[in-house]
Amino acid sequence: MKPTTGFKSAFEEDTYKGLNSYPKYLLSKYIYDQKGDKLFQKIMEMPEYYLTKCETEIFKGNTPAIADSFNGPDGFDLIELGAGDGKKTKILLRHLTEKNYEFTYQPVDISQNVLDELQSSLLEELPDIQIKPQQGTYFKTLERLSDYNTRKKVILVLGSNIGNLLHKDAIDFLKNIKSSMSQEDMLFMGFDQKKDPQKILDAYNDPAGITEAFNKNLLSRINRDLDADFDLDSFLHWETYDPETGTAKSFLVSKTEQQVKIPKLEFTAHFKAWETIHTEISQKYDDEVVHWLAAESGLKVETSFTDKKEFYRNYVFRK
Ligand code: AVJ
Image (cartoon, rainbow, N blue to C red):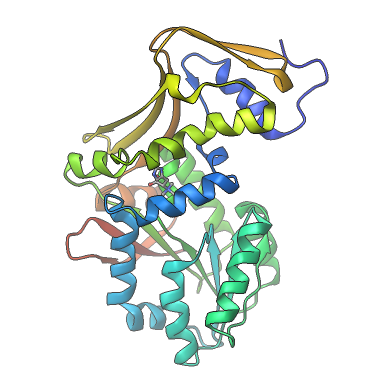
């Protein structure tokens, strides 16, 4: 039964839906509350999480070429979807500022908190930068920006964030971006590449248990926000990677038969022993798949940059 008073947020509704489905699932976007953001920062610093290191290597090794490709006749506006702590972007921003490129930096995030922290750290490190944080969903913000911007836009989506989307959702996302682009605009996007499957499993299954805590933050958050009583120790973090499809999947597996009360949903979830909750996908790509996604979305791949090991690739797309 749905709660008699109705759902008070999308989080409540999505949680209810996911735990009433078979097989059960939860949406990975809800991992990122204050605690989840901190855990993700820790993940990016783990030796096993090669994605951040590779993308940083790409930025460091190609700064002038990337900066030049961004520039337009009247300068440009750099719009970053899901900026986070902006560590990788800062490499570029420093170069752009030092070489006196005419640009603004517009980080977009749903969390005002993340934006405030990014803004204050940036103004400390690069006092001359023109930063215009944009709070909101990617889609609404892109719509608004395409109405206001008159010069070249460069849209950044880093960290292989697109990997959380199934291909059909990734195509919708790319189409949305495309519809906010004009002819001269550019999309610069990071895609984690297919590689030794063990390397991928290790990145999502660290022995220190940081990824486990990150995954289980979905349950902690339901405990915190919806007064539930999930016992985190009775769930197992489980990662799979299918080298054929390139899909890494995260699960939480109930080690025992159990019931979990979720008072704010007026609902009790039942778990059989070894029942799963699917929590996240982290898609891995190759050139062929990226070109296919681009073609399906009406975009063209202009060029790309990779690291020495070719673990990761940043692509430049145009309309
Ligand atoms: C932020 C979605 C790119 O899938 O690699 C890290 C999130 N999940 N470890 C990823 C994540 C587990 C990350 N993305």
